[in-house]
Image (cartoon, rainbow, N blue to C red; front, side, top):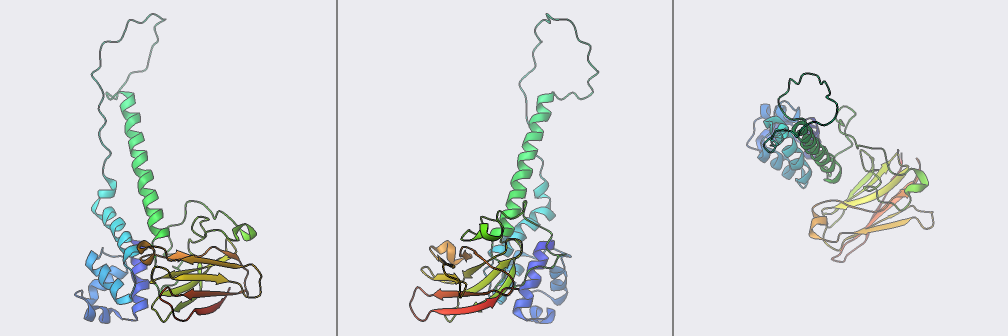
Length: 279
């Protein structure tokens, strides 16, 4: 719920609308939006879709967060594991070794049933945690959003980054876990409607570019002006890519460095570039 509320607040900021403005443009009242944006109640799915539409953002990330929050509030996420049954118990074979005195058994359930139930429960928990991490890291956030505040960023990656400094050169920011809560260096919207963004991870000491909202065949390139060899590109290769982010590999950077992102539209036309300064 906290992650969903934080994402919705980012979307509202991107729209530039007040609570009253949201109420005027949607079927939901000002007081309802106050509850939704502050995490006091779960908004309807349609309200999330409406806010994404007003902000001009694909609804994938927020709907994924909504489904997780809805599962938590409805209790479906805490469903009991399947009951494990055991075959009928027959008389034990005669004991041939010295008799062993055992402590009284108060739990009538055979031990192997308890172990099996714990194994099922552990599997369910592992799947749930993995789903949350994938949803938060891989799904897009708002085109107009800034990194969440420390209080809002309550979910972190399960491990630290997979590289630092020179080891990150040319590597994927997603695979190296550098894309969790990075800084936005600069953002630009192209004449074709596609977005470009320069992102920097202080932990990894590297910067990359990403694009979304484009068309199949669009190509984005990251360069560090004045540095030979620091040029990395990525291409929108499928319909799935048009609904999500496409990332370039990373270039190692430090505060004060100038980085540049360029987009070559697939439909032709001018190549658009913009610069950003790493902070």
